Image 1: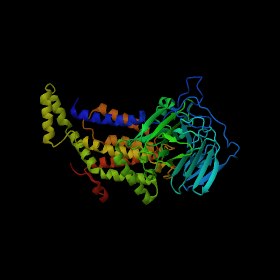
Image 2: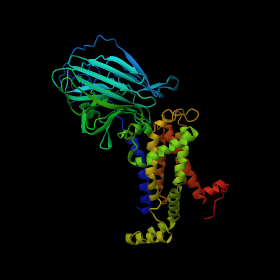
Image 3: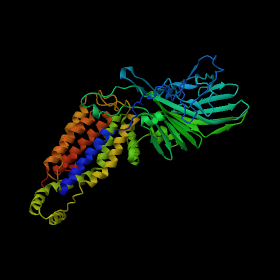
Image 4: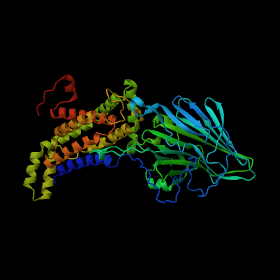
Length: 551
């Protein structure tokens, strides 16, 4: 195969791989966990009767005691932070509702605040006493002590143990403090671990159907993750979760995430053990983070402190918490470029207050920034195309002498100052930037239900009428027609046309914010190629001089 043909084929295959990679291996979301295979096993082996996660390292047999505070009245406390409304119940001293007031879910006319307590039967922030089975009832009812508008305390006591949970809320932020104190009222020391967990439930969602169902993006499921030694581990295998996954060491935080939201537990202790729970009864999954082992002599106490983050995967908000929590936003391999791009997107939004327009301005800015590289690449491809008649003549003349053929081709390239790789290398240099931009727009919570114009009320949702994907298909076709084909190979041209339709179909179910970026990027590329083909520059366009220059 001719060298220039190989180059074009490699470029086309690279595009196909990039498209197919997301098509076949989209951002991972854990599917529903499989049903239990052992009929004798409990229906939900990872959760007790109160919804408290059972750490796999504890003994299987758990004894319980009667709750001495069972006669207390059921009570709830609602806390307002300005960004969230949290309802706490004294049954377990846990939140029963955690509504993010600035984020909505459901149909536009029936929208309600996003509630991150997704598993009412296994409410979050339950206390786990690892190694101290039977001391705390599974449905412990706490006494409520409302301290002030930002602090509330829950107290449970028996003859042997007292548990005090204190929540510290702050106005205007998504994080809060949680202190858990254990007081030994018995005569013997208590040894074990104190754990806090967060469970989530993935609602049953109908699988995509129809002709193009296989290219739809993944359902937005919750999945566990944790941070250790400067990196994030995401757990997506339901079999591993059902069996229970654990890790020891300096765990910075652990939590559950969806595409746009995160619930994370950040321990203040330097060394912790994190237990990740899955259930064999679907759809529950979650994490438990247990502190270093403690020993509480009789008549003394121990206190463990945690920071709890429950809110959007907003870079600024996560950085405020620290402990590497901002790593929960997955920017892929090119995070070094993604973060500046995100800040640039927010900068444009601060000027025009419309994220759809901000995406357009951001795309145009990056295209203009990379224009010299693109121009050099297109010019090289154009020169290669002009050399095709001479290349074919050389190939025909020396088809029986490969060594002489290569030497004559190299001489032709040198005499015409053409580098066969010049068309590909500049484009490869742009790939990190475009992938980073793609990841930013895919993950940006700023686009969650952000309106654009007309019926585009949610930039994180697909185009409801497929208008932008249809325009994009036309744009892909025009771009393919205008772009020089250095080899003139008909088979490669047909392959590129097939990729055009495949890629356009793939756009049908992407978030409209992403499609707007790709549409604007494609339109600008068409303009660049059209000007290049006519020997014009952007200065000519601005001056209204559209007459093609003589070659």
